[in-house]
Image (cartoon, rainbow, N blue to C red; front, side):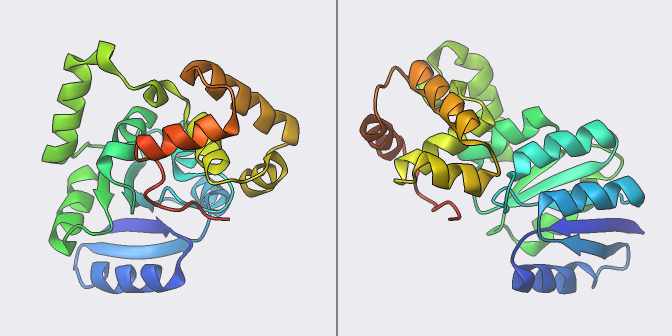
Length: 215
């Protein structure tokens, strides 16, 4: 039996997903939570085979939580299951230790096969993500500027582009105002920009705002 914990802040999605997974004789959702901090607490106290983790979570995002999960339990398999396309976070997730990356629009059969395939800390890369990885290797010198941002810098950038104030971003991300200002300064330097307006224009031109962030 593959014991699974699912992390998503939408109760209806968790319920529907659990119903689908629990129909399989060898798979079982044994636990669930709606944010990353709960997950960290649970994996410290319990044993699971697979974590199904969204990226867009309250507080710290899924990529940051993934990194911490892998520090605490390196052999625990993690499936990133999110609305974000592979082009957006696929490479970041794999680099952070994800065993697989799937979209919430993927067929249930693909999801089930992936869960089985990653048990035991194995990796299962989709053809699309494999192509992205191959292109990354072949075009290291052709990276877009925002691809050089850290996960947190990218997150701050998107909030700024959506018109959030530094204080609002600090509350949303559970950071201090000074820390948010530091991230903003770093991303401005890396992108060669000088204002929030330029950040917004850059984000729009590069398709970084196609999915609204939580507020």
